[in-house]
Image 1 (spheres, rainbow, N blue to C red):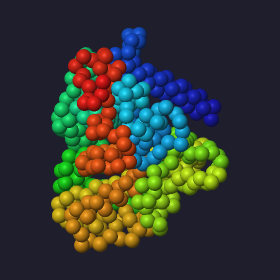
Image 2: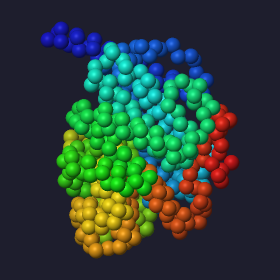
Image 3: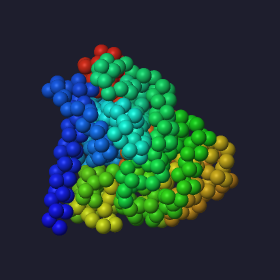
Image 4: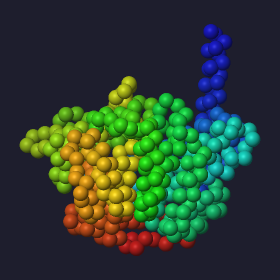
Length: 461
């Protein structure tokens, strides 16, 4: 027994040193890429990529870069038509007005976070595939995860900023003066990464949690990308792969959809305490505390009276003579164990039903589209739609369903408004300050100052 404790204590210390080494290695590299003046890196790539354990640790670190936490997600909801601020905090008011200055700290931190993930992925992709110190299983998984994360980051970059620097090397010389690459070329790069990831990654999760990318995560992102590009046939094909796999269906009740053990979850971000920082940002600390953000009236009114999403995912609280309605998908503010724990969900199966519905509607298969829409509506206790609809009516219903299904879930609403060409029409009705240029964020002023090859987006200084 004593020997077991001693060996495990030693192994634990080794793993802590390994995790520290990997973390410092990536931190130094990412800051070099962003041209921050720090001491020269003396750590060796040979150490980080010397064993299966070290590479697995490096791969785990990728997921922190796709974690859009309590800071990012509410601001995007404010930026569009999902939530309103009940606070006078300057940053919340900036995003609620949809007028963002190019020196905004949030924009800069988001840019850095996305490119940090790309840098880490590049390092792994360069050092893993031909590394004979690693097992075949770890090599394939590490490269597949890195390509998935790199594609995920670029998908967000190209949708938030348009043309962006396309960096596929960890050599900082490629990043310091990289010009903006046309969006269509970035999309080609995204698709290439995801197709390779789809081959490399296995169907099974490496652990009990759904907190690492699998083949299904790559397929789900492919479906989203194809939908964005208007490639309806491939969007239908990839979404069908998820739905027909049996891993993620039937959809659970709305009240349990965001628990960490939810069957429909394709990918989520692990946390130790069973609660998300997003829950802490959206849920009031006491019954008498005004929530920081409220759901917009237009979103509230879009729900049918019996809609379980309205009942389970939105919470009402009356304080004085006023009633506030706030997002309640993530409910935990403190450590929560057991089945009621929550992880931040990145991908879930209901999106695949609505991706396929939209794709089949665009292809003229209204009956197929109606069946998929009705799967999502049935879970929400909403009456089924008639399959005898025009293409235009069917697409309008899908767009409304997406708004109700995915509110305050990352960037989906913002991206939906843009890809369907509705953003100006919708936003000008709810925000008098909205301008067409606001469909793209400003390139961070700090980056333009460092990189003379970058040109600012139209409408920003």
